[in-house]
Image 1 (cartoon, helix red, strand yellow):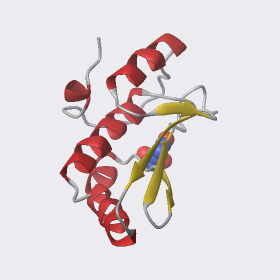
Image 2: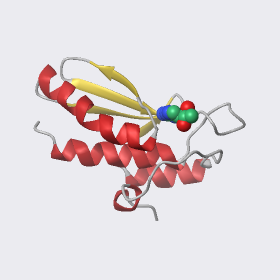
Image 3: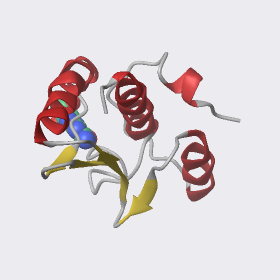
Image 4: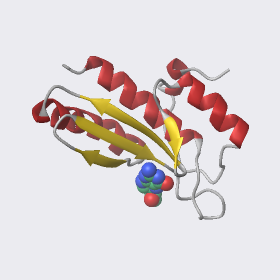
Length: 116
Ligand SMILES: C[C@H](O)[C@H](O)[C@H]1CNC2=NC(N)=NC(=O)C2=N1
């Protein structure tokens, strides 16, 4: 069984290994509120206002850079939608790797710290 606590201890690293469907299901169970949507691991984070939304985006910059894994972000007044996938897997066609879930768990940990 995979847990969020385990995932946040890991560092994202270059990988060419995609997760299988069964592994994706197992990893989705470990991270709260994330779902597979159009081939990406996606979650909508909710905030009180635009300032809190942007503060979250600034706070996640550190781990995004450290793990070299960059979410697609959709920022609106009180929402931030984050989408992860991994370009280098499936022979460069892209897919889902453990890195997507490491980053998902880290964004959740930061969100828990944020003023909401
Ligand atoms: C060379 C560099 O590590 C890659 O281009 C990284 C950069 N950021 C990335 N971000 C995301 N979300 N997926 C990737 O596959 C990815 N690849």
